Length: 185
Image (cartoon, one colour):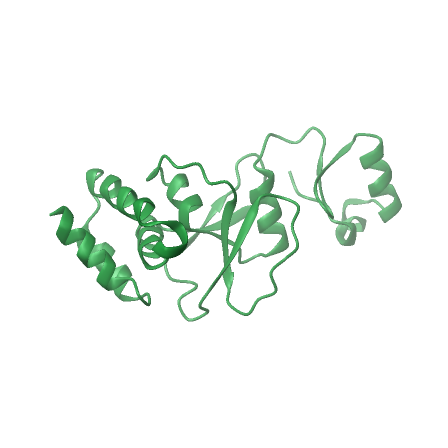
């Protein structure tokens, strides 16, 4: 199901007032400020929808990406979303933690995935990028998150050479990743 916004209501055959009337009548559900879904839409993660709608380049990162890849048991309190450094951080209603990543490395390890229950997509970082980010931002996310994700990734057959190649492309990642790999060896 496609999201509706006041600016795109006409494309769906609704005026702005018709959009708000549909919300009052229960035909549309408010996902976040200015974002609506049909009331009969499939169940979906509203934070993912809000992030993808507010920022087309929004990328799931850090603990949220590690949780999606099933590399941590931690349940993030908020959806971790990366946007390019210098971008305006959107105001949001949901539990979204916006992180600004360097534009030069922003696209490394990204892929687009569908948002379950919708026809929208959102970007997410690969397991290798997410682990490298957790190590380089360990002061922000905690060292345990990075170490436990690395252990699980290795247990599942992750290739250290691929991880080191990813870490070498990111600032402040190569040394802590290498140290952790050596400690686990």
